[in-house]
Picture 1: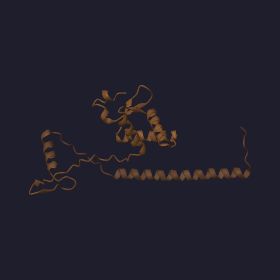
Picture 2: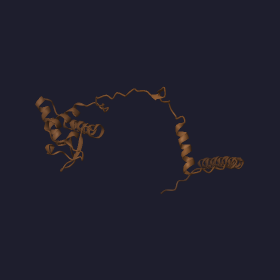
Picture 3: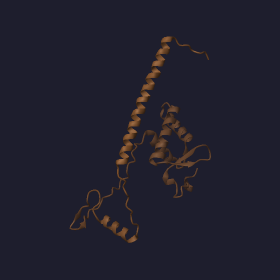
Picture 4: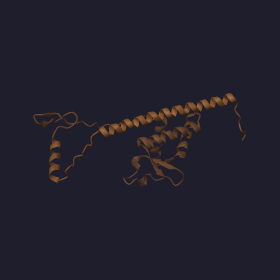
Length: 194
């Protein structure tokens, strides 16, 4: 590596910067020492606080616990009429709750194909079915675009909504089934096997 040489003005400028840094650091040192002294002075002025011993005997602790639990609680007080709870019952809706994600055209296609075939399908089979469907309609089939849509759809239906289940497949990846096709142990029922 070549050794750089500085001219006289560059050396003076460099020395000036170093002197400036030394002044800044000494100022910071003085301020830090002054702060430390102030904190030590505060520490000496503060009284030492004794922490009271808490008794852990069974009878006295249960008495205090019962007295605190019957006293007022946080939050809005419960509604009572003449010392009794109100007789209103909560009405539970029979509609299934929406899971927050609207089904896309691809989502509906996947679920429809599973229902119509009555067996778990793999991604390659779903792609083939989509291609055949678009060819029968006379539409152009974009393979790359459909693969992206299918991956998003499967992720949404299997991981977020729970509308599909991923099952181990003897090949690479998973096969996808509807939740009602699986028993409580998570094993595919015989009539839906591939």
